[in-house]
Image (cartoon, rainbow, N blue to C red; front, side, top):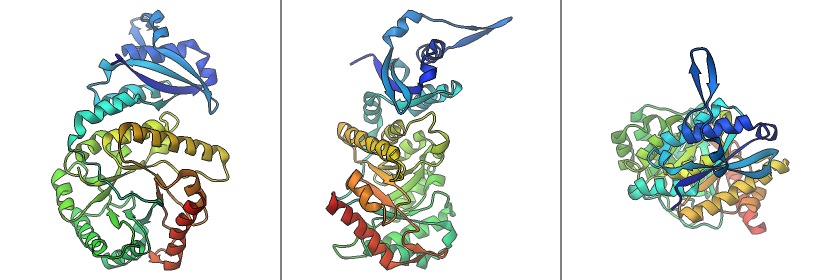
Length: 373
């Protein structure tokens, strides 16, 4: 097995042409040092510069940026877990300001998964010929428990699969337990082959560190849950996924990613999400009129499917804010192995009243997309 992991970065083309910038990044990654402060001056430290040629390789231009790979010694990352990966490969580059992490060696992801995931069961979802459909219950609806149950039941009866709480919804633990028990029981009691998967997805971000609370939620019927994983941290997600929620479908919400995307690419975000034990992550919905956005999203989807096969892990991209008008085209582009989420498309008004005609049109739009694919 090679002694190095290959890590891919990109930077502005103008930045690539300044050797000192690349040299400083290399020194930090390979030696953990870029400068030292002496009594009378700051001095750039040059450490075995000639050896850099064995670690650096240019990969050409893409998206108006120069891409390149760096071989980082395995010994620096093998035992560091997410803390080491995020500190060394991403956190440190923030000081440079012009680099973006684009890809983490598959071998590190695979090694890390093998080191902990013997208890993670990665819940299997039934094979489907159409995408999974999801909706969101917004806090502004201020629905009673009975109104929530009614809305969830109607959605699932018409073919909906996931009913997710909003990423900003943080009720008391007692209320969360009550909602999980009542809503999931109502969904589990539904019959009929035309119904959707029927999973209620509470936001467990606020209780991710409390194993006894997570265990109680599971005992009340919780089989899916959402985590704001960039807020809670990958390490916390991994701990829960290997313990209290080992059998739960974990929906990753990337709250805060927009502020990070200039330095952290979407693909390493997906890789780290997989390694943490998540089953699905928001990757963004492209504006279909923007060909660059569509092309980029297509590439991400292709790379993700290849990664799933290499690692043999069930994982789904999530497209949000979808409507019946764009669903057919999204399905034609990305196929059935995804989750399409929307709320305003079928929930009317601030009180969260479900419109069955809109729900049916939304479900049928996904089927139409598959028929035209």
